[in-house]
Structures are given as structure tokens and as C-alpha cells.
Image 1 (cartoon, one colour):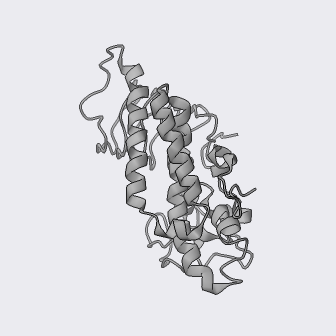
Image 2 (tube, rainbow, N blue to C red; image 1 turned 90 degrees about the vertical axis):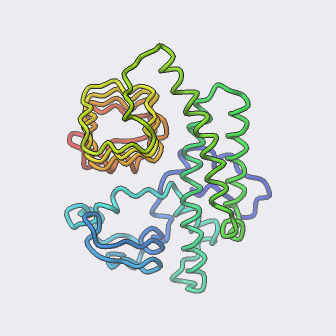
Length: 290
């Protein structure tokens, strides 16, 4: 069920629940398959310009190859997460009238989706920040940002006129504050397991870190492509924006990581022994994920 009422003067509290930030493709006009563009790579089998329907899109907005995206060369589709922006834009901002039914709205609908998707991702992180901070002042800042974002995404014009860079900076600042607070509790013991290479934005592609304790590591924006993190303990590790494509996570403990998303997990490799946060799930391509 969409979470923002288009005619409500006050923000609705369900928007602050992570359950509302999950994709509901049945209530979306396939905005990820139309608004966004992609180039032919190992993640996509074809070129598709932004603002045009994918060749695999059916008339009812479903994907004709949904059950075989990976073998058909559309791995990129399987790792994408709109954080619930698709159904919000479709059903609330545009009142359930599709870009097909009213082509004049297509440009604004697609532009709104690109912005709202980023705002919903911020809400995902901020929801976690609320539950992880013990500082009343930080908690207040987080909740103010959450309500500001929710008010913004209640109207199309507010979305399209938003200074997205400014909002990113404000959210990033408070997320970093929470990260430092959480990670310090793991590092206060004087554990020196973290080496100089484990810093924000580090190039750790293919690095073997199997069975290491990475508790409290700041891996924000790190390139962990094909890195071996099997059996690692990542409690309190900040993974905000980390690139986990083909990262080996079999047996790793990610149950208390910071800022992990479903999209990151979908891009990685794991198994039934990978410990995940309760609000994330094992991807279907992982072995023994049942």
C-alpha cells in the first residue's frame, strides 16, 4: 500500500517504516524499466536510452524475462532497488495514472522517479540511524531530516525543485556522525585488527580478508569487488555505498553492519551461512538460500 497521501497536509508516519521502503512492482508503472537508461555491458545485454521502455517490458508493465534475467544478460536488473520509490511516484505523485494513459506526464514522472528514488534511499539509511544512535541530539537531527524528506516527496513540484546536492550533504553528515558513534564502541577496546588500507573509498578489489575481524571498519564507499570476506565478522562496519559486486560473503556475519542494502547483497555472493540483518533477505541466486 502506498505510504504518502497526496491530499494530506501532514506527513504520514508509515513513511518512516522500512517496510514502506521496499519495491512493490505491482503498483508501479515500470519506472525503473523506462526512466533509467543503461549501456550494453556485462550487466546489461542491450543499450537502452533513458526515458524509453525496455524491449522486455510487457503491456501490463511486467517484465517478460523476469525469471531469467541473469542468464539472459540482465544481471543489472536483479541488483537494482528503487527503495519503494516506484509505487510512491506512480500511485501518489501521479494518482495512479500511468505515463501510457497520459503521455504528457511521462517527462515529469520519470524525472520525479530519479529524485524520489534517491530520497527513499536516504530514508532507508536514516531509519537505521535512528535505531543505532544513543545521542538525543543526533536522534533529533535524524528525525527532522526524515520528516523533511517525507514532506518533500508529497508534491511533484517540491520533488522537481529540490536541491538534491544539499539534501545529500545534510543526510551524509548525520549518517557519518552515527557511524562514528557506532564504530567507536567496537574500537574502544583497543583492537588493532584494522590496517591502514581499510579506509573510506579504499581499493580492496580482489583482496583476501577471509576470516578476519572487521568490526568497526569504515568501509564507506570502498571497492570490494570480488574481495574475499568469507567468515569475516563485520559487526559495526560501515558499508555505506561500498561496491560489493561479486564480494565473497559466505559465512560472514553482516547482522550488525551499518547501512547495508538489499541491492548490495544482490550484487554479492553468499550462502545460507551468511548472517544478515533481520530486514534484509538472502538473494535468490545464493545457493541454499531457503
